[in-house]
Image 1 (cartoon, rainbow, N blue to C red):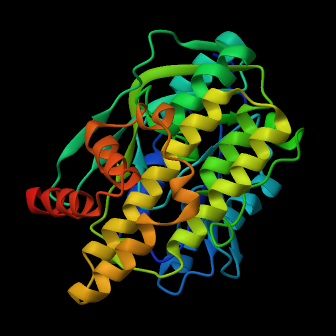
Image 2: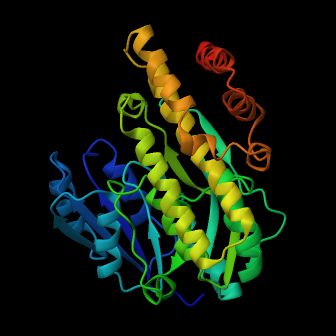
Image 3: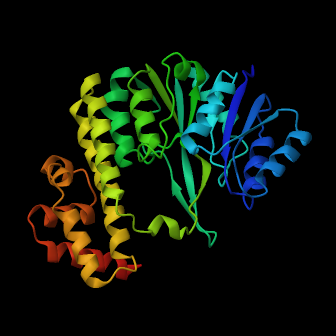
Length: 339
């Protein structure tokens, strides 16, 4: 098989424990025509040294040291320095199947597509692997089916995969030609969602490899459960910016409905942070009721959106919609108790 150059961008920050595993999985690919760009995002640990050591061992590796600006900006640095026909964005605490590049290049060339999507494994600290295989019954999507099926389905995992850029190999020209860049996660929650909106609304074809080729490490990170008072403000801003884009581009209503469902998942995560925080019972109740009565959230609680969600999430937000807040709190307790 003719081997076009594939760029692999790996943003790196404070992951010295996992970095070797990630880079080794890329270096060991069965597909060899790679350009591996390690973007050291001002990492305060030993990652900069580890990156430099890898570059000495493999001439395909390019290291870029920069000041810390976050994941989105680090990916943009990778885009600016990439020269491959295709590009991956891998997170540095994850790792990949050694055949990921070979399988994706073969599939994307078969249809001359703009992007190749693949399944993943969720990897937990106890070694447990949870399969997130692509569930679609077809492996090719044209522009119309991308907007009406693929893009909405990514927001709610209807097809077994989400919007994460780590789960896709992109045609680099499709990114550069459209002037696309990642937003900073410090500006908008889920920069991947916004990037997916921009990218998938502008391309003409997408393909799927059904195999699970990516190992997504779900670290037990207490910071993700830390309550932040401005979290819902950021969720609301996320919804506003994505909605503005959807309306401006005239995307199908299905995209908007599924986006609201994704907003609900972000909101529920923030609500759980309150419930599981160290706040007093009185403080928790005050914060939870602020969520329940949030006018932006309440404006999204229509049946078309709730019907897209799991039974638990649907019941939770139905209770919020009907102002049965004691039921909402009970559901939070039940879910927490089951853990």
